[in-house]
Image (cartoon, rainbow, N blue to C red):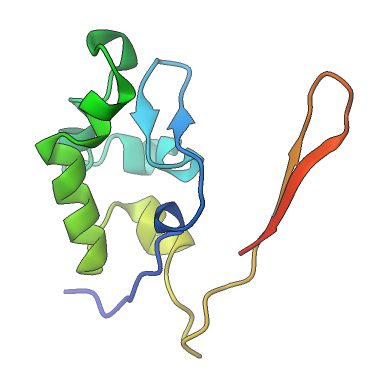
Length: 114
């Protein structure tokens, strides 16, 4: 059993991610092979193929996504969450700077400090 405490980025104002295979994921870090193919995370992936649903809500309100959220609230998650969303030993979450850039003209759309 892990002693890692989580402060999930996807619980903050974080964007979901659509990968190149057409799956909706909680964030881009979940697309790392180690997590994407994790047997527990595959439960969420199995109901997340966008073109198999009428709406995004149908995916994110599924039992599998709700179970994923509950697991995160109980400090359980795939390798990406345990790595990128863990609270540091000093009980402060690691500071991350994220910059969203408009690919058409190179202007900054949004900057976040997490």
